[in-house]
Amino acid sequence: MDLQDQLKNLFPDHIPSNEPEEIEETEHELYVQKEPMICKYEKRKGKPTTIIAGYEGEDEDFKLLAKEIKNKLAVGGSFKDGEIIIQGDYRDKIMTILKEKGFKVKRVGG
Image 1 (cartoon, rainbow, N blue to C red):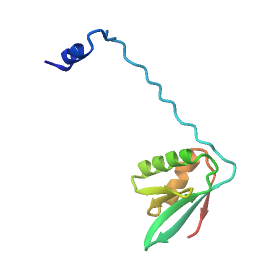
Image 2: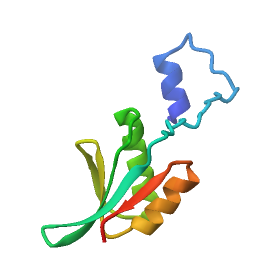
Image 3: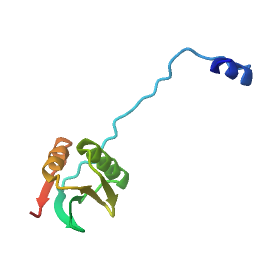
Image 4: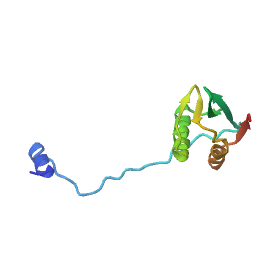
């Protein structure tokens, strides 16, 4: 007995449709601010970290941005207290990613 037969036994009144469901995925629009975001380099517990701060939009948007940066760079990181913390010194790459998205970025430190 395959899955279709099992479903017919469970739901005898159901009429299956052969039309594929249309799922619309809309690109989430990030808030682009006038003030530059800060991209700085620090050492925490002896390890290099890149910190991005100064985003004025929603925290959810900033979390999505953090996830996208981590995926593009294939590195670890986190979002805490309104800052994106990326493991390693990736200031140049992060700044180019943010500039492509339309953000103004200011390099601080080192």
